[in-house]
Image (cartoon, rainbow, N blue to C red; front, side):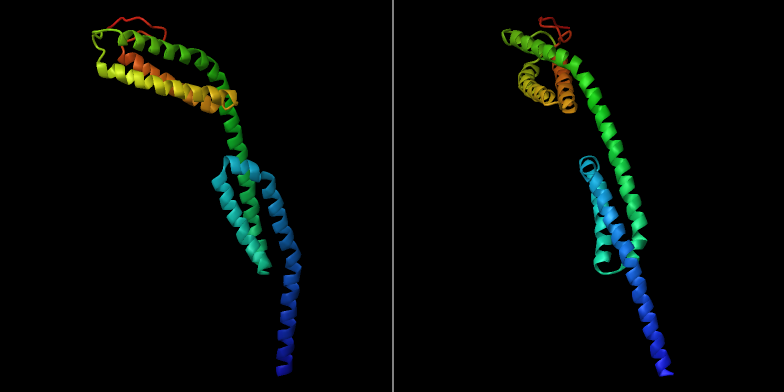
Length: 207
């Protein structure tokens, strides 16, 4: 009886070992395939969806740990979800890339008008500040504080505009437009505080 029982145990162990051996190849292939697929999209994913990439990297790491431990069944069980995660990562990165390229193209179009209008606005503010600075009495509605604020604002506007110009030169029109719009918004506020009629106003009229 004991001999028969021992034989059954040995047979079961052999079957289990055979089963593990049979699973090893497919498990190794599954991990290798996942690594290859992820490598193909890693750079794009790192640029556009880094957080999602990190999650997939962690998922792959867990599967590789199972492979290293010889738990081939766990590898094979987890492989479908890992494959789906990599596919989703690729799709998400591609979508973000398309959105980024569309935004860049729009920014490039927007840069043209801004590059023409914003310097005129800043020049108009500078002219108005120079004019008001020579006056003994400021026009109605213009305060000493608003004039000093305008002077300070000009420094910021000129600096930000330089950054915008440099960004456009390097081809980063998204940053260029963002900074140019910031200068335009600030110039508009200063023009209002100095009672200017518009971007081309350099006179001393008051409302």
